[in-house]
Length: 357
Image (cartoon, rainbow, N blue to C red; front, side, top):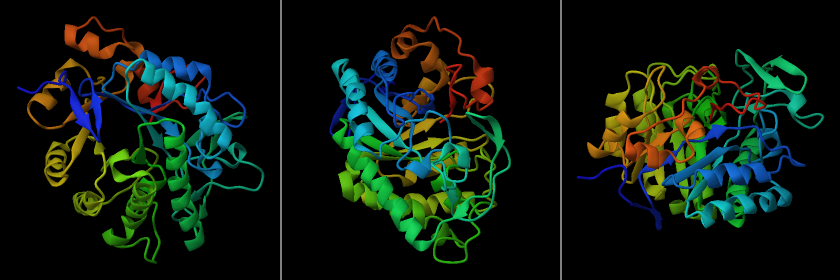
């Protein structure tokens, strides 16, 4: 019987187990130019016993930053600053993918250089606020991406992926979930375009497919994962009644690219969709299962045993328990994470609690 503690081959890398560390925003890039720091190297190395580490969201461009003190992968200095992090993880025997996260309309002009505005598929503001160095600010109306802007953004993702490989990452995960830019294109509430990048399911999935294709061509599909969160309303996302159709179509278009994995963040009542996408996806399937107000715990290990997923992603429990795989194997004990801040989506970073990554 397969268990979550068995080794797993992922894109030519041997994972020590089938327990993944989910991406979680940390806001610790206090180095110059949004660069990684020594603290981040320590943090990830402490958790290298995970079969796979997926980092916090890393912006692929200047305009892709939506929160304070989040790291980038769009400059030579940033690439260099990530090398000690990946080296620290590899010394401990870990495997680490960089999550590339363009926040799109989730952000504020005060977080960007003078003159830049957040960008999105359509000029539709999300309801809510974001933390800035000047305090909480209302989310603003973003600038609608032009055709040329879309092309630049796709290339930004590809360039950041090349930078990730140069920095020593084993691969990248494209963040197509949680209401950020790729998800904004997928959702009709935030994508009101009438050109070839919106409208129909085919139009709304186009940006996601173009980004995945460009990144796969840049570094090889076997080094690329893709994260989705169908039906997740986080960050004021509205997806309508065609969620199942949209994500089945997306999976069908991504499948030929030979990606390393598909990573689904499950919403309430979606197990049927999870099982269908699991069946439709030809490769490795990672699940961040729905657990309501509880954190993902030992009970979710059974999802590997019954074949629901190849790997299970753990978030909050990994923060309080850096040696989580060993504790899961032993049945505990577990330090208790501060879930109140986690589920509140706190992006301030200074309290060292995770935001929803």
